[in-house]
Each structure stands twice: as structure tokens, then as C-alpha cells.
Image (cartoon, rainbow, N blue to C red; front, side, top):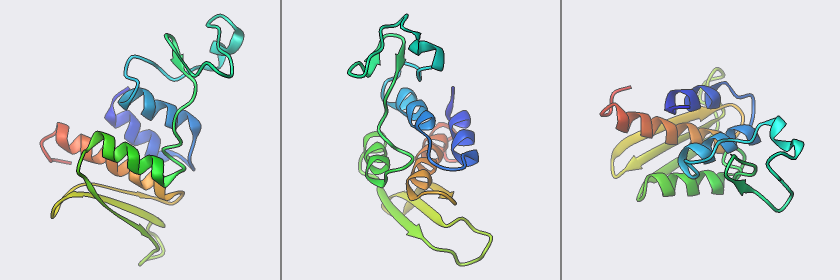
Length: 139
């Protein structure tokens, strides 16, 4: 998985999903883990309700794509000192309902839009900012 894959997953999602939350958590927070797969729950890894993080996978993640506070916390963790502007509303019928812009001072470092949730727009803006860092600001 890479940033382009995460961006594609976020932009094509039809709403917030716990699977994308787990992918974000494993990519950014628990880098040595992977999202749990359905066949992980057959008992071979010893998963239980109280066992959220194990050697082979990650079962629960913060709801980055559905809760604004968790998405902002992820932005603060990955981009310390970032400023953010959040918007809800449309100027044109064809544009997405939610928008997010991440900034350092006057410089826009990442932007995201979503028809589904404000938190999704923030997650897209985070991945956009990190992609810009990787490519030296080019998009």
C-alpha cells in the first residue's frame, strides 16, 4: 500500500468505512501491522473482543473517515503545527459538499473534498499534503 492507493480508496469511497480507517491506521500509526482480513477471525491468531492489536493484524482503528475530531487528530499527528480550514456547502451544484484545506501559515499544503463526510475531506487533504511532500510540492 502507498499514498496513491490510499488516495484512490478515499476518493472512490461512497462513505466512511472501517476498512479505510484500518488502512489509514496501519499506514500511518501502526506501520508494522496490516488491516485484519475476514479469514483472520477463524481463531488461528487468537483474536478476541479485548485483543485489538496483535502481531498479524489490526482489528480496530480510530474512525478517521467518520469523525472530524479523529481526522484532525491524525492531521496533527502527521503534520504537527498544521492549520486547517473546513467547509460545508456548495457554490456550484456539481462540487462536493465538504471541503478541507491544510495550511502552514499562508501556504496550502493539502486539500480535499468529499460528498460524504467532512472527516473524509480531511483525510483526503492529509494524504494530498503527504503526497506533495513526497513529490516536492508537485501534484
